[in-house]
Amino acid sequence: MTAGHDTVVLVVQDGDATSPDEVARWLRAHLEGWPGFDVLLVGLVVGELYDNAHRHGSPPYVVELVLDRWRQALVVSVRDRAVRRPVPWRSSAGLTLVDGLSARWGVLTQAKFTTVWAELVFED
Image (cartoon, rainbow, N blue to C red; front, side):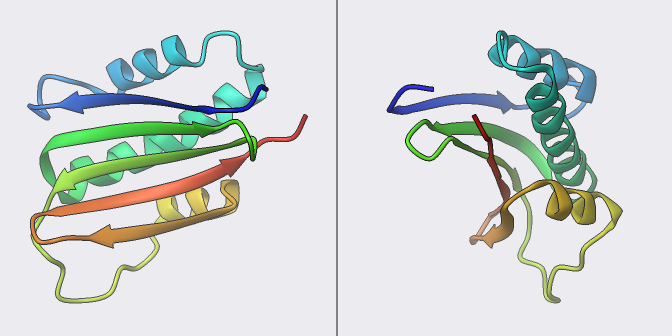
């Protein structure tokens, strides 16, 4: 990896129009040339976060990948339109998987949006 930052964003305006398979194809296209294991890792995390947004939020869904080449890390986030939750977040099976695969993850709740993010760190 060389030094720098790269960002790609997918905005899904209508949840019914973009399936998880289409998101996976978009992701693979942006990870072309990456090692197979890294593509699998990112795909699992993005899939779980996108599925979580689909289940608990509403469009627009914003999938963002920010590559930090200095740290050899990728921050994956999925934002959806959601009302503020009155109770704390609980880890479901999908978020438990995200926790195990990522260096760290979290939830950012704003007035009308919820963003769930995960940081993946890669080795040379």
